[in-house]
Image (cartoon, rainbow over all chains, first blue to last red; front, side, top):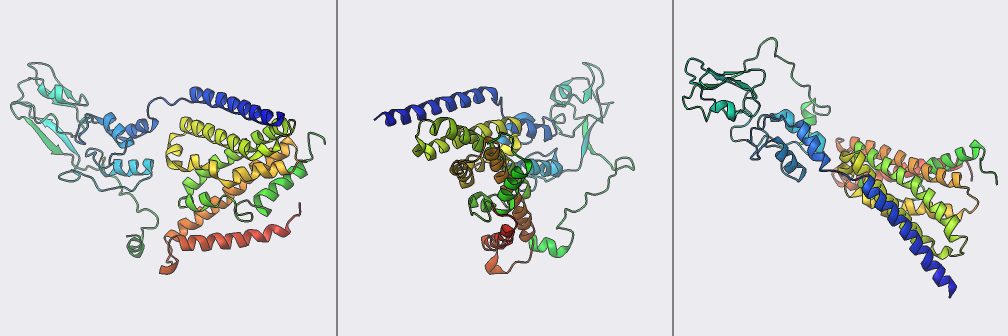
Length: 191
Length: 200
């Protein structure tokens, strides 16, 4: 009869020890927030433009972490989708936007027509517009992400979106093809 | 038996568990992750690391349980259930550590991490260690570590081959799982060739 008690006691003691270890580990290795959402957020362009349907990049990152599609970021374009696909180990998808990927745009204020209402400054998600009330505003080109959120609020319609032209300074080589897709027959066998 | 054994004996255990008695290809344990997680090399490496860690820790813990709880009280019939308890705890612990240190690996491994619990190698190594009562603490833990290394070796090799096969021109009847099984069989044949290397 004593063997029964010994067995039960041994198992109970074992379980208690292991329970204590796991309890300690749960406290020691607690994960705050969702670390994946942080990593996704780091890949998004931080334009906070809201074109994905979420109120900014962080909420979209959290939505992706919860299973939303990765192809809704228009300013990020193809490059962001590729980076997200690599991070999350899923297939990259074509950009999900009405007019597809737009060329890189930048806002331009026709300064002679600007009345200094500051409405565009309030709309700009990246603080790329410089100016004060009753003063002429202008766009800091290197900060502008081309999200066109400033076009709508302008009461005198003096903001144009102009495409960024390629100069000798901004031209880059095209990305090389991925291995395994170099030859046409390879691409056929993949598809 | 002295606590510190000659290195040659530990080396022998290493070679034995990695090549000669490889747990996957010679003893046919742990085939489910071997077939399931070998589609991509990166995932395979991640699972190998996690499994090696779990195996080493589980063989250490199960050795302690066997020698300080089960044997003194003469209740060795509780071996299986207590080892399963040990393994489940170790896996749960690993899961917490991986989630904290490498969330990406945690996401990639996904369901396979908890499934290490049911990986037959883990229980197999613990039970084999317990059967060999002459094993010391260090020998038992080296055996567990070596079993993990052997598992990692074949899993990564197999994943690399399957990545190649995925873009190869495979005849229609052999596509998919069939060619995977065939490859595994051929690999197993190759590993059987090590059986003449040493005798334990």
